[in-house]
Length: 229
Image 1 (cartoon, rainbow, N blue to C red):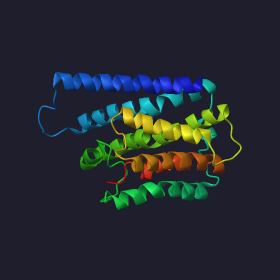
Image 2 (cartoon, rainbow, N blue to C red; image 1 turned 135 degrees about the vertical axis):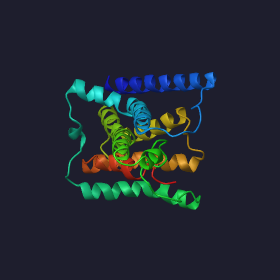
Image 3 (tube, rainbow, N blue to C red; image 1 turned 180 degrees about the vertical axis):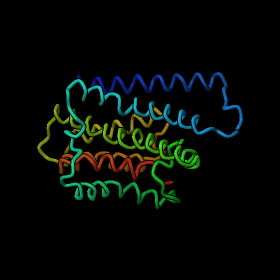
Image 4 (cartoon, rainbow, N blue to C red; image 1 turned 90 degrees about the vertical axis):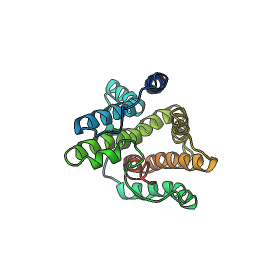
């Protein structure tokens, strides 16, 4: 039931997003020029984008945790074994990083720089930049990374595996990542890229089960995913 709630909620938000974007493209609406955008307007645009991201990755798990009266901390947001968790999670990102280097796609590093709003928010100056980055980090960082932890935990309840590195929940999380990104038009262009993304998700979730610490999943989305361009 919990998995159905999470997947149904994400599906509804994705369908609504695609419907809205399709309606905007058919109406031929445009921004009306490239004039200055006020700080308040920019924060509103960022918040709307973040709410969509939260709807896809965070709303379902929030509903499930509220209904089951489970705290986010109970899924492994703790200090114990944080160091080894970070190290092993970083290793899961290594294939993707090496692949990007070989394709000459690493030119700069900035957390969330491939998120549409980040550069505008940073250029807006304080306090817009601070508020905007907190909004971005919450949706594109915490909730996107943590959602896989909750989903994997529920999958592993259905399909328990005694071997940590043979993990049904991690495999499901990797598959969901690829499917969601494909639906949103962000599908990997090559098999290698897709495989590397799968390794990241599978690896970080397997590490979470191995150490009992979920911060690696979140920190990957804070500092690696969307950070290289």
